[in-house]
Length: 77
Image 1 (cartoon, rainbow, N blue to C red):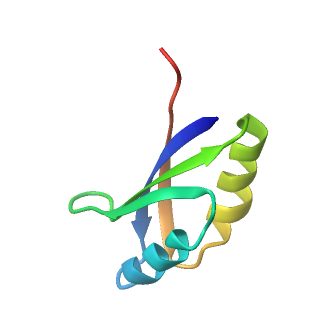
Image 2: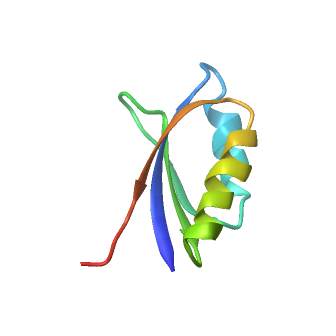
């Protein structure tokens, strides 16, 4: 299973809406509110890199209120 952390900047005032939307997604394993440069962080899980790409490009890009994301993909060491 692949894991990625998504750092999210939202449109001001949309933090709660984005948080609730992410919380309802099956692929989102955790979501937390942050203070600082980013507003939220989400941990997502996928079976492979194709599924991960579909989640990032197909799902996250359609969520209203997300202004910018930074994706950190984990690797086994």
